[in-house]
Length: 142
Image (cartoon, rainbow, N blue to C red; front, side):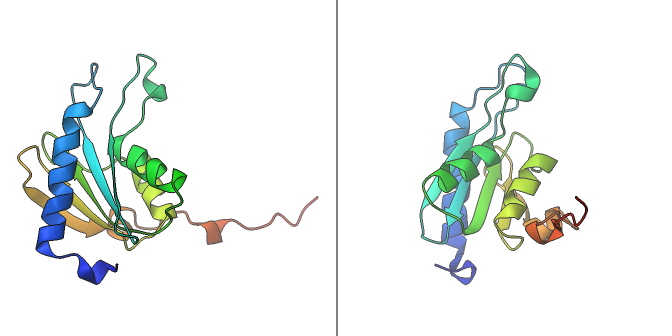
């Protein structure tokens, strides 16, 4: 499957999947439930929700849950991710960086709770100047 095969119907399927799983979010502190649905090059869809914790840094965002689920099952190529929030909020910086690790051309669909896509852009557009593997240089000093 390629990014060119992302039909309107497939885009809507991703948004609907993210919208559906959003109800599973564990957000007792922020009350900001987020659902994500990630489409891989193999055609599989992995979902994720945000999971908060009383020790705030210990929580995790929906987008990263979906990516980590996919990666833990051997997926490495992503075509698109739909993110559904109450108001169409954008992925945080950590999520943008994790998505960038697997491809700057991944399409990001940002939708509100009603499933209306408010923005559609690539990870590169969301995270210009992303830190990538080629930015790592071997330190020549002992």
